Image (cartoon, rainbow, N blue to C red; front, side):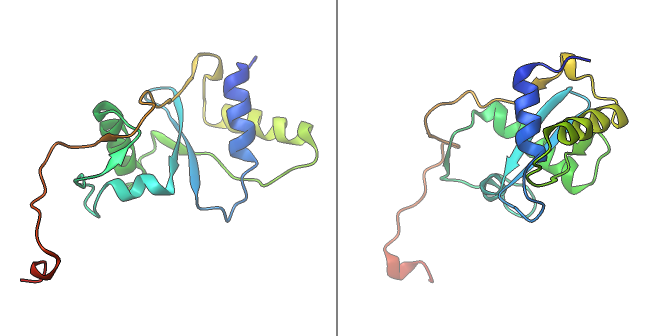
Length: 143
């Protein structure tokens, strides 16, 4: 099974993350046959009920935010269609790393030859939602 170079490089990076590194998590969406990652900052786009926060500038389109929100819900519910990619840390032996990647893809029945990577389309920050925030004087915030 030949893994496309972009997918292989992405998997090499994902697998070599330290297990205690919480800045980014790597996943595979079985329904969309797509690899993706969630950065710690992505969680701050929503409140605890995954409602959108207002006044946030981000590098996502509204469609991408919708996908992110859907995936976060699935991750929180431990939905089996989202597979977490293990973090093994830096391995000196690249052969062992490639064996682990192959084992992971086989165990999870991932069609790596036809899979894709979720890529952000927006290149510059844009306001996430158009909503005017009332300007208040600082001393009126508590009234």
